[in-house]
Length: 108
Length: 121
Image 1 (cartoon, rainbow over the protein chains, first blue to last red):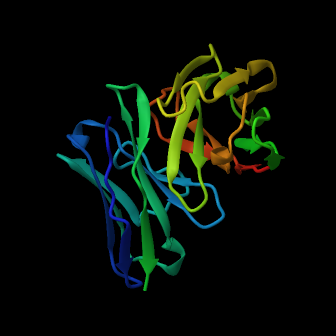
Image 2 (image 1 turned 180 degrees about the horizontal axis):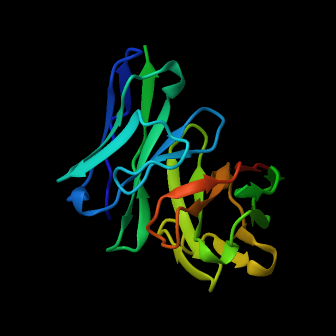
Image 3 (image 1 turned 135 degrees about the horizontal axis):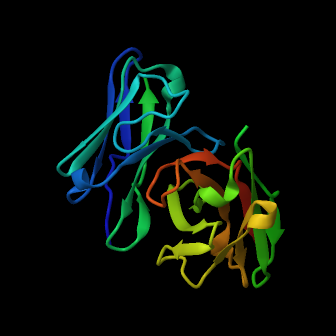
């Protein structure tokens, strides 16, 4: 089965850039979606189809995908960005969704 | 406003059955896939399955196939997740979510508020 690997945690100072990776075999051939989840809340889609942003999501959130790694980049990080982030892809070989294990972003 | 509203928290005993719901509004319910996601306490997101209410085409995660049933009633714009015999390990938060557009591979841009299911003797 297809596996997505995320680092358990990423720490960044306010105003700096956070990069959260999502590794998978030839993930560059798939569309990657990213979700933000704050404690006690439902997930929120922040990037879809590798690099598109839903309406209402700040331009500070961007995504890229190539080779075996997809990356969510958060520029000018704010305290309010502290959350868990999950990547997701559709595995066409098994006809199912796969989530990464999640990354906890800590704003120092 | 596009929204998904889920049914309220449930407390059940092992072996009991349960059906939770997810009602869509503000959009064409039959034109978007609805997925179900489990989140066990303190853990990550797990995809359970997805349904297209327009024709009830349903796909399940192998981890949940045979353990739950996903259905939809398009006449009342509601999707369901049901168990015939709950286990303590089914204790979790369950979310429904709608795909961005008409394909099952799209991201999910509208989420329900979640339904907490607690199974305890």
